[in-house]
Length: 432
Image (tube, rainbow, N blue to C red):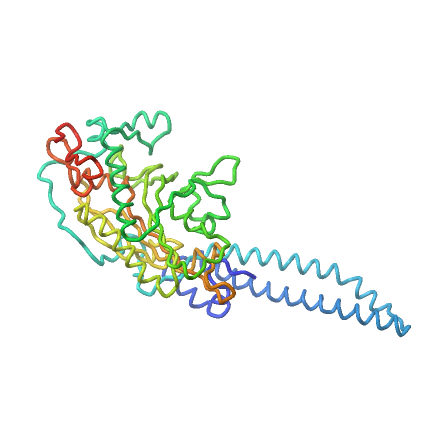
């Protein structure tokens, strides 16, 4: 039997290790699933062994029947036994196939094993701050909600977008489009200088590929399904890049593979956490640069810190205060073994909010996708995958609109973005 996610040997030999990990997450229903997987796997092995025994007996009968016929002995009993075997074998094979499917589906629903450094907690209020940069400053005047500010400047139209597509969409116009594209260009430029290869991936994926990169049981409610087609619109370029080497063996000499994905992202569920009725922070459609790495298992924790540093460097360059949190067990999700969130400071809201998620998924995604690495004709291993936001412009734009908003209603363009905007210093009425 293949082991699509967690190695089935781990569950067979040390189920208590997996159980303790699930208990850290507070995942009671997953503990019950673990019990089912252990039971199904035990039944599968017993059924397979019984079927193999009958197949062996069938071969023995064939030889014994030939010998009896040659010796002119009575083979009636052998004939009777042989006649009953196909039905028994067929029933056992069907049972084994059903159990194998249950084990595989169960494994696909079990989350990744957590790194020992992940803090135990119930929700995001128990994430642990590990670093801060910059000093949050009081603006000295009342900041306007960014959506209202953009509409006043003629740079966004939420109502006309709602008219044709519903809530969670926007027409961005003029300098807001240029600022959005400047953020993308700056982040992509940063990633290319860091040695990452730009990737413009497909915006749609088949279900089997999507099930390789995430648990659709957890994620499907936030995804758009194409009616009548085996296709989903991507929620992030992490997903098509992660599935790029599905069912392949990567030459280990190519590792690490470091990609910077650029795409629009589509999400059905925008949540109820926004403070503004009209806003960009949570959208059904937004643009993003994503970091993604395939590497050797022994290198993945070093890469996790590199991806985090890339994300921090982008927000330091934008001169926006931020903090880094180690995401706790109750907030980490299914796929990551450890995750950092980088949270930018939003002065109007008076708090830090997540702008970057940085995850080490260890071998979880590669196992689901049947990706291996190694030398031709040599031993193979399961590579590790990591992902991190470099820039989600919806959230980056709001961070700029709050941190760089001026009392006269203009917005200063961060210095690092000006070369991508023809050296423009402000957006709004008082351009220089």
